[in-house]
Length: 116
Length: 112
Image (cartoon, rainbow over all chains, first blue to last red; front, side, top):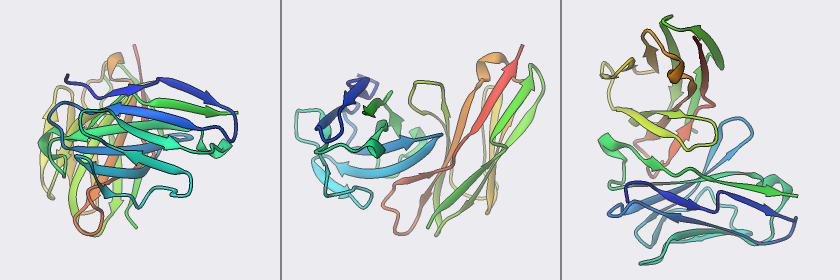
């Protein structure tokens, strides 16, 4: 399809529980990026993939966060033991080109994670 | 570290009242500057990519311009449906691995 599909739309977890978010990029897009939007419009880069290979993971809190993009499966972002500060909207974006190009990066509608 | 500052933070406009949004940036070599529109509860929607100083791009009532230090998004004769948060993001040429550094956005409300 022509949209980036993120599921679920909303996720509520108790502190310490696991959370798993999914992203199906647009077919044919080789690059996938994850961003975290906290508070008022503050986007933080987490990780990027080129196909199933991690391209840049410098934004990931590695002790609790992990991500995968496997062939023929949606990409996933997993938080092992959630903390209150993980409450945010998580966006996935995909692109045909590494730099985004004239079409930019296409974002999904996000998953709102609430940790209570 | 790449920095993006957008002003004003919030703007209320009467329908038809043209205005400009500012995005000032500091980056280690600019690969691209992106403008996105975000509606409440939705993901950012791509508007423009600008690459070099002097470049301009237009789409309906929106026009984006770029200098070496800032970008402007001009909204001409806005309509209520132009109400949204407009996000500016930069992509560094060196060391950024293509990730975007976002500003905090310009929240625009257009009153009928």
